[in-house]
Image 1 (cartoon, one colour):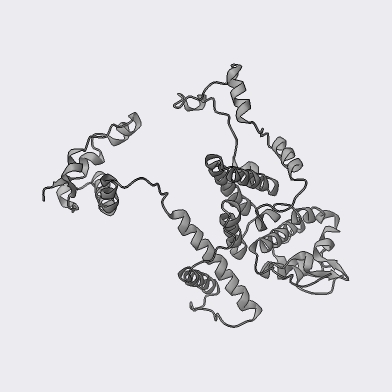
Image 2 (image 1 turned 30 degrees about the vertical axis):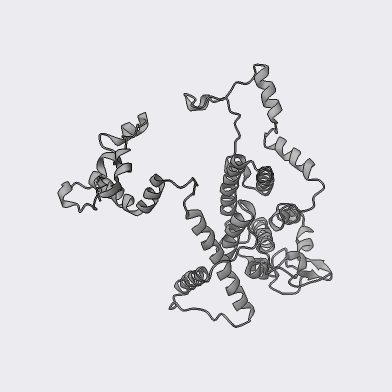
Length: 381
């Protein structure tokens, strides 16, 4: 049996996440505040073992407990599971959820049976378009109202995706399988809805288990690249690595009350390798955050209306901000510096029509709208 750090532990963050989660579960079962407390000789898990920081190694580097020797040829994973109170820890470590973080479709012969069981457990039924058509033909269902009043009187079937229901390994795996099934079937609306639920459930899962530092960054990385989307080979940019290193160094130095400075990047000690890995994980999170902040894009054929709107996007924002300031700040309009009027081609200017507001928009807009507040003049050149 191979002992020590298994090949690939540092390369795949999913393996480190599994080890860290296993450790959090074991700590909770033992009532230990810190991982190193499990290594003390008076702890039930380290009694009669040679003194060695086995659990703290997992905390620091995400070592695989199956590859750490407890005694003889017994791994730390099996040693812990051999204690009655900790028997469930091995099932958590071997949960199929972790396999689906390493591969899109890993081998799992029992998948269909497990999925049917979980669908019943969570009160979810799988129906086809044929079932829906049959329901309408037999008068059991009606066509959904495009604008139901009240909104909850819709005939659309409900699906409770509250994150509190799914913030566990079974729930996360169920959402992950349904989400990938929707993506494989090119069902974008269903996939987007399930991905949103998966993202919320994953965040609550990390909060429940008190993930911190590198474990929290690694979990966020996996959420963005192995659960909500599939981008296992994501690499951050040089600027993101530098920003991540600066953030981590600043946080570490402030905690230790030391002046902020960069760590060496070329040394090869275990501590320095750990530091570079932490920087990489944080940089990947920065990359994902930047991507999530990007606006949603749509596409259309080239036309003069959208060309003008895109070219004047920043100027329109300035006028909108000025209009809001006028509404909020108790000053005469003359005291607020107004941006110059928007200059619009005469053909576009002549095609302008006052927008028709919904009842809610009309109530919120009071008397003036952006159409009234943003000055626009025709280009007479």
